[in-house]
Image (tube, rainbow, N blue to C red):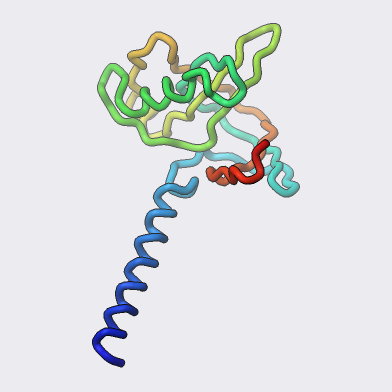
Length: 152
C-alpha cells in the first residue's frame, strides 16, 4: 500500500473514531440514569418502577419546557447553586402535566453520588430540591435526537 493510501486509511479511521466518540458523548448513554426496573415494554413505551429519587424541580407552564423551565434546571446543574457546583446531567427528565391540584413540573434526577454528599441548594428561587416517592411510571423512550422532518 502506498504512503498516500495509508495516510487516507489512517485519516478515515481517525475520523470514524472521532465521530463515534462525539456521538457517544452526546447520546443518552453518556448520562447517568436513575435506577429502575422495567415492568412492561412495548416498542418505545415502558412501564418502569423507580425507587425514591432526589430531584431538582421547577414549575413548567408549557408541555415542552419552552417557558424557561429547562433553562432553570440546566443552570442549576451548571453551577447556579449554593456551592457553585456542577452536577452531572441525568436521565430521565421527569415532566408532570398541569392539573387542577398542582402546576406542571419538570425535574432532573440528582445523581446518587451528589445526594450522598449533600445536594447543593439551588440559587434560583424557582428551582427546588424535593424527594420523589418510589412508584410506577409510564415512559416513552426518547433517543435524545429529534427528527425534524417528521415534526408538524
